[in-house]
Length: 160
Image 1 (spheres, one colour):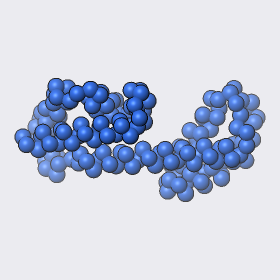
Image 2: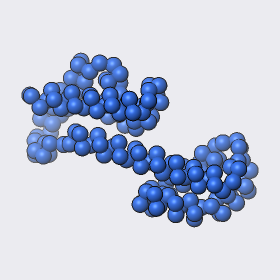
Image 3: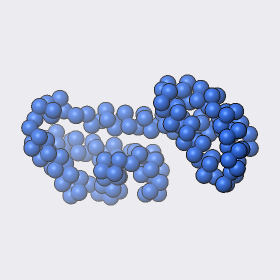
């Protein structure tokens, strides 16, 4: 564990520059604070202190790029499977029945690893990166499988 005084010094010397960098990259002050806090938590959890200030700025930049990548993937998935306009007007029992039909279809018709990826994403709310790590897959492959699953579901339920 790194000496507390060293961490305080790092924090005071670099916080404003790290926040500024994250805010510029993310365009959101709250997200920027989250990213910077995550970086500091990783530094605290590591046994090796950062070699220099550039390490911290690089860590913030990389964390921001990862966050942006996650947001883009999330937006792509949402666009591929938008909510139907009239679904909000349907009675709750009809909507629940449709969700049950989708869940049954996923469990009975999707092959592995599509089924596991779908459940991890929508039941466990894991990110593409987290799913890829858990299943030992490339994130791009994981994303491709998820998209194939969603398209297969949309195609099937578009007919019914």
